[in-house]
Length: 116
Image 1 (tube, helix red, strand yellow):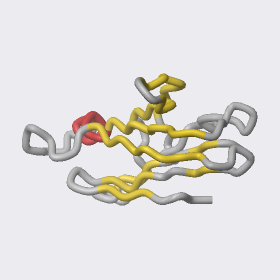
Image 2 (cartoon, helix red, strand yellow; image 1 turned 60 degrees about the vertical axis):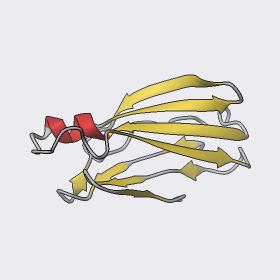
Image 3 (cartoon, one colour; image 1 turned 90 degrees about the vertical axis):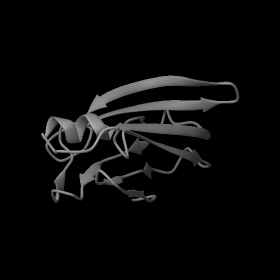
């Protein structure tokens, strides 16, 4: 399975289709960029971010371009935005397991959890 994500726009009650997301590995002194995606109509990437063979024990960061997403919907928001790029840092302790890291987002709040 590996690593997957999706984003839900809680302001509009829809998947965050078109939101950009990037994945990096967090190393002691740098970020290693692994991939970039645009979420599909379901607010998901069309394939896993990393397969089980690619997933390694360690720290990762998902970066969601929430500000660009809400601007693309012509959502009137005061500048500077309260939330622009949302970074989710998380750890993988068992690379044999599947890690699903969703984002529930509005212009003013977000939450995440380890899904299935």
